[in-house]
Image (cartoon, rainbow, N blue to C red; front, side, top):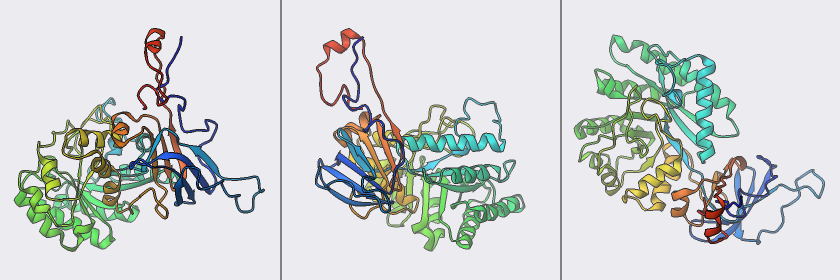
Amino acid sequence: MDSAAADGPHSGPGPAANPLGHGPVLLLTDARLSDGRVVDVRISGDRIQAVGTAGGLGPLPALPGAPTSTTGARIDLKGYLLLPAPAEPHAHYDAAFSAALPTPPPETATDLTRRVTEAALTSLGYGATAQRTHVRIGDVHGLRRLEAVLTARQALRGLAELQAVAMPRLLTGLAGAEGRAQLREALKLGATAAGGCPELDPDPAGYVQVLLDAAREADCPVDLHTTAADPAQLARLAAALGPLRPRVVLGPCGALAPGGATVLAGSGVRVVCLPQNGCCTGLEGRSRGQRPGLLRELMEARVPLAAGGGALRDPANPVGRADPLEAAYLLAASGVLAPEAAYDAVSNQARAALGLPPVRVDAGFPAELLAVRGDSLPGALAGGHSRLVVHSGRVVSRTSAVREFADTVALALPRQSGGVDGG
């Protein structure tokens, strides 16, 4: 049988024998940028040290204290597009992969930690070097789901940055006393942000106020999980946020009524949408879709917009994926965002929602990068399967996709240096 590889002569970033990880210096050669330039990129430690024309940066320097013949790693990225790494701003890893499990799913510490870790690694394999997951606390869950996320976060150090949003169900009145105590305990344990869904509490405004008080006390950001259907309610919420607004994220806001985007305009609040499954509530059951026209309204109001994956094969979306490029593809395919803006929503806008600095393929910026097979951003969004992921200057994941055809099909196809589909 003859075969044709989807990635042409380079089935993955070479050399094929190069292991994941490397020393303090990494040289990426012949990488194409989204503006069409082909460059070499030298990384030292966790920063991009230099970007130059292909072949213009010279050989790798010898490593300090090592034999003169020893250098860092060199990776050929010919045929690949080099981009700022995406981030996942809105996930539910404590429920990931639970769609096929018994109801209720097992919640032992071992099972929870395994599913959270698998979810984070799945997202990392697609390129998300920074991730934020919403975690239910209180009720029958106590803090065990959060503890599983924090255990996974520790295990993932050096591979990806994992943030946790503590989400109590109730915060007001006598019924919310346990939630208030557990929220403060969660933030002391290491939860990154205070969050939750105000609509689930009998007193949504009171819920928000308790949450904001806890966030101020812990000096942490706020990530509210809301459908935000009523613009008047949203206006009251925005007013209550006060000085915290630049550190507040709202998502997924899938049911936001017309006029809601105008309320958020200029507020400093960021919105995270979920193109892959429209909306989710953090509860059991299927999610509702995103209201048509919402994204256009948010863009026209210049509300900072990031995009996330949401459910990962849980009851809210049994076929959910954790691929940021799929989210960007859906944004671009909707016709509301150009491919460049769509990718920005899953990369630098998503990083901003997580409180992280921006990334550019330029000297001095964090070495958080994604190399994806393709010669242009639209091509990469349409089918970039082969990927190489760099976190803190270190190669942490590599995926190589090869497609084969039967003899008669392969012989009928013209041979192209870029492979069958460049993916």
